[in-house]
Length: 340
Image (cartoon, rainbow, N blue to C red; front, side):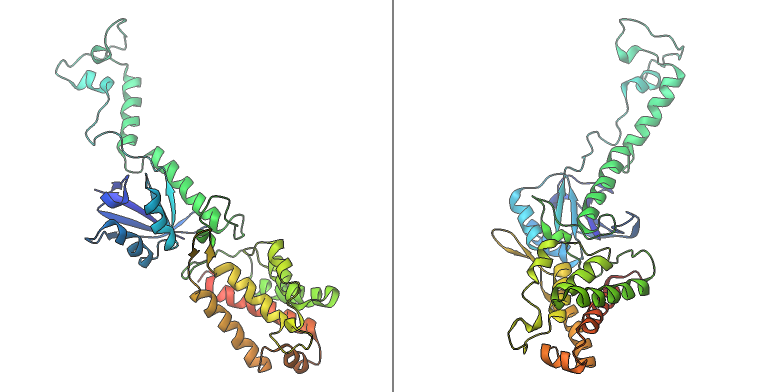
């Protein structure tokens, strides 16, 4: 997951169009660990060009102080999720607290540890312990990664990561959130716990068992991938949508094998585009590319994806077909998104 953070003089900028550069930070969505950092100077262009420029840089989430609805729409159209409310720097770099100035000013007030009642703070000599605490506190405030910013940026990264992966699973976008941020994109690497080969075998075993017990090759492929892979959500609506897509979806079975359809549905579900009431969001290239790789497996083993021909090539052993479909889809996803 790639975060974009606008900076001015190395510090967080409130508005993206007033910044000098962007920090581009790649974060593991499972652990929040920073994997790669780089900076990119903003090109000399109008604000409307920045969304496309950031999309070209691979940014998926923009963290900024404030932004208008029109600007948010420009970023959303390019698949970039915006997180608003990053705390600005409220004091100048040379700010120093009055209690500290009491001993640093022209009067050079002695540090006695006594507090004079009724005397303005600027004339009050603080205790040594209080002064030390104040100086440490203000040093943290002057830091570009002070506690307030650290808390916000950590929380923002967690929010963005939860859209992508939560508890080891791809999360569904919550209400009011641009769902494009929840889709897997090229270059993302998932931290997959355990042995990849064990996941591949589990997908095969579940597909084989579900088809033998319940039937409906499309739904059984969907269920096998949902149950085997921790990053595939168990969306019951997706499962329900596959109900009429088995057996080639026709009485004569001359259309696509339901296992191919179910596996392709998972690939599209994880990587495809979304829409809201007004527009389609994201692209289709990645979903098509992965589906074409799935087709290549069918072509290699069966010579076709047509239901009756696939069934004939395995002697009617549909559980084997479903098991292979779940295995191939798992292999493709691990090849594309698994950690190097």
